Length: 238
Image 1 (tube, rainbow, N blue to C red):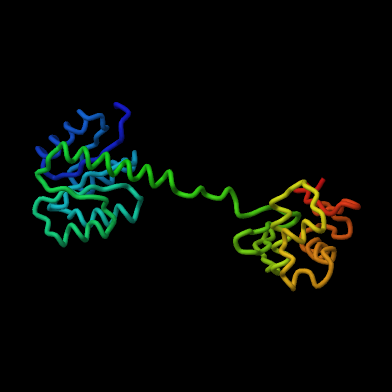
Image 2: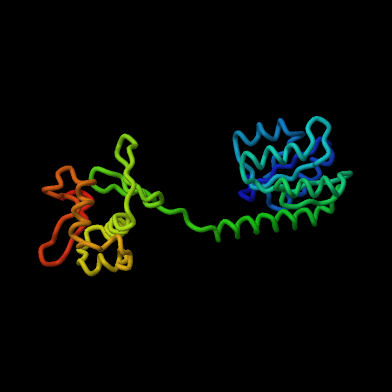
C-alpha cells in the first residue's frame, strides 16, 4: 500500500478495469478492482473506500441501482463512467447522489483530475461542517437536564417539562458549574423580561427547582446558597 486515497474501480470489463486501476496506482492511489455490485459490497465490509469509480452499464446489476444502494448505506463519493448511458441516466445518477460523471472510454488524465476534485470538495465540506455538540444532557442532582428538549429526565425515563424560567435558570447553572452567580446575574442569564419568570423572587424559583433535582430539598447539595453572594451549582454535590 502506498498510503494514498483508496479508490474502488467497479467495471465488468476486465481490460478497462485493469487499465484504469493501473493508471490510478501510477498516480499514487490505492486501488481495489471489482467486477460488479456484489464484489463491491464484499470489499466494503473490510474497508470503506475514499471514492468509487463506477461503470453504469453492467449486465447483472445496473449502476443506478448500485448508486442508490451505496448512498443509502454511507456518504461515499461516486464518479460514474458512462459509455452508452443516456442523459436521463446521468441526471438520475446525479440526483441519486453521485458526485460526477465522465464518458467512457475516458481520458485517464481527466479521470484523475475529477477524482482529486471530488476528494477536495469532500474534504472542504467536512472541514466546514459545524462541530457536534459535546453533549445535550447535563447531570443535575437526581435528574438529567436535557438542553434540547427543555425537560428533566430521571433514570427510568420519566420526564418533567420545565417552565421557561426554570429552563433558563438550569441552563445558567449548567453553563457555569462551580461559579457563584448573584441574584442579579441570574436575572440577566434567565431573561428578566419574561413575566412568568420573575413575578416572584428568584429564591422562589430556585426552591422549585430544588424540589425537582435535590434528594433532600431542605438540605440542598447541588444548588447551594452562598450567603450574601447568590447561588452555585455543584455538579458533584459537595
